[in-house]
Image (cartoon, rainbow, N blue to C red; front, side, top):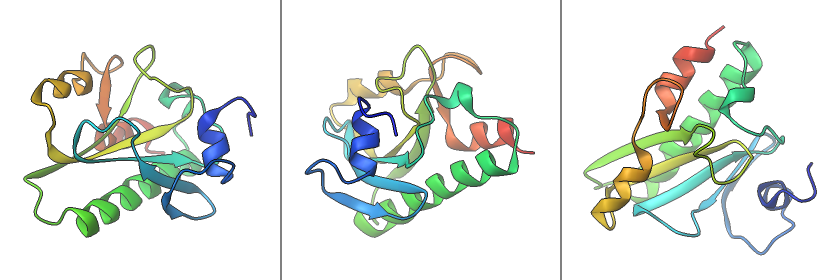
Length: 139
């Protein structure tokens, strides 16, 4: 655990953040500044700085798959009538916290201009959809 990392503190329940899910690999909670009808973050319990630190390995593929599954289940539970769901990660230098976290959205974006923060600017810049990241790190 990186003591100065706010997400490490949340994962170890060292903050008053309400967790929507927690297990031995991940924790999930509502984004402090939501950009959509529902906006959750699923974080790894292990301190992994960014998607750039993930490798083509069974371990990393399994972790990201699990993060996506947790996010999907939470949104299906909490926003079953949403227009659309979206799942992805910011890639450096556009990530706000250096700790791996999956953005989980039940759309629409609110306000609508917030969708600009979640655009892909190419395969290695901006926002990457979770499924595209899984393709990249599949062993």
